[in-house]
Image (cartoon, rainbow, N blue to C red; front, side, top):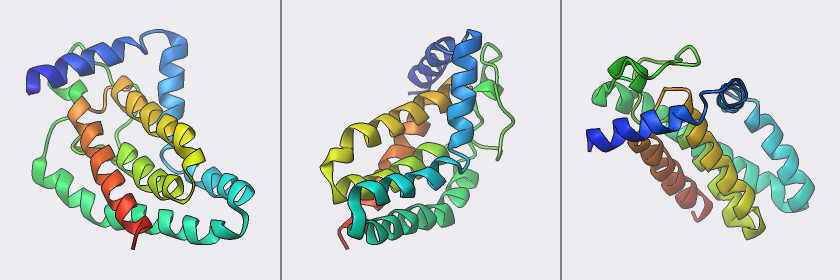
Length: 166
C-alpha cells in the first residue's frame, strides 16, 4: 500500500511542478482553510431559496462533527506527511498540523458538499469538482497521500450523507 501511496504522491506533485500549477495548488489549499465555506452558503441561498437555511445548517453540523474527531485520529495514526517521508517531494505550504492521515481539507469539503448534493442533485458536478480539486491540491502541495484524501472523502461523505438524511 505504501508504495502505491508514495508513487501517487510523487506523480501528483509533478502536476504542480510549474509556477502556475504551484500557485493553483496553494490557492485551492488556502481556500480550504475557510474562505470556500464562506462562499458556499451564498451560492446555496441563491439556488435553493427557502430550503437553504436547513441545508447550510446540516452542512455546517456535518463538518463540525468531524472536526471534533479527526484531530484525535491524526494523532493516533501519526503518519508523516509525504514531503517528510520522501526527499523528492517538496512542501508548497506551511503545515497546520503535524500528521497527514486523514486529509482534513478533503474531509471538510466532502462533509460540507454532500448535504448540499443530497438536497439537490444539480449540485453534483460542482460538488464533485470541489472535492476532487481539493484532493488534487492537497496532494500537489506535498501534504497528503492518495489514501489520506480518499479517507477524508469517505469520512466526510459518510457523515455528510448521514446528517442529510437524519
